[in-house]
Image (cartoon, rainbow over all chains, first blue to last red; front, side):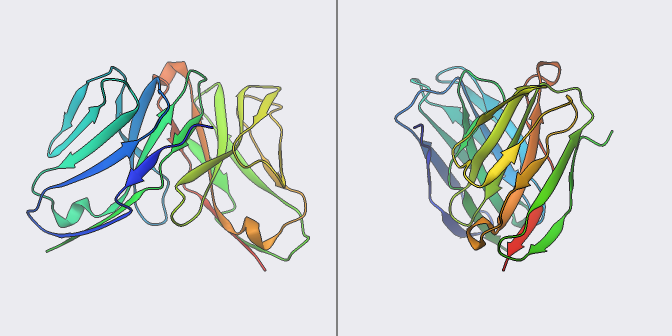
Length: 111
Length: 113
């Protein structure tokens, strides 16, 4: 069974601080996706990383896929209150439409 | 463009009752799936489908049935609801035409008492 361990589960920081969220697995994934979820809504895709070692940037968010395609990280620079939400990583195998999700990280950024 | 539409948004069931969560997508996606989301556990795959007439079990299939008679629809049936099925349910779809990006519905909040 493929598992994704996401950490930390909860993170409360002040505006302007930096943070990193980690997703780790013993399994290899064909791609890894990061989602953000607002209360009362479904997850919304932020980015997909496919190649080992790949780094993608989305404004203040930096996503990295591990060289072995078993782990990934999300780094937020100078967090803002608008970044508050649930962040989820999800790994995709070779079969389309199936994702294995991490437990999620509840981020709270206080002004 | 509606995307992925789930109904109902909220439902309260008594233990032992049955019900169907409806899911429809208008993007002609091949893949559809159902997840449940519980606190501290992320989203867990219940059932998925790679095309009309084809379904398979995910990580937590017990107590749920699915069918995929058309490309557009993928209903999830709870046969005999149990309190352990109290959760938020998300339907999702993806397809190669959309670069295999997975699109989620807005969720269905189910409480079993």
